[in-house]
Image (tube, rainbow, N blue to C red; front, side):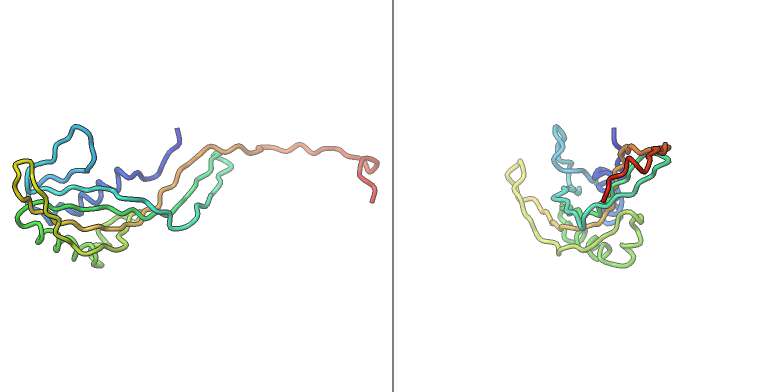
Length: 171
């Protein structure tokens, strides 16, 4: 099986760690679109990956000794962050301010960095109890640089071929 240097799961986990200080203690942060997992109670945050987009063409590095090729492709990932609670707008604003700051940039590891974000928008919804629920949504973009390592075949030794002048084509 091929090895990937960083997965979307890891990106989501790192973003969840960044969100944690901006919500009440004990509030859950979950990933959206997971089967058989109900949405947690309020307050909570739901993270939904929206798209990944290559930022440039992939390039390769070859390691003849290890017989591998590493394929690198800088990638932008957009993630929707939904805050649920009566104070969701405050959580969203605090998160956005920190995400857009130099301080926020420094909180992420070297292989995952914030690019930009939109502004928070109110996204009300009707709950299962037919009540209005307070939700604020923001979309953030981050860059990560995944690489995949694949096997490569290469010659380990060359044997010269003996050719006489008579065997060469005449010009």
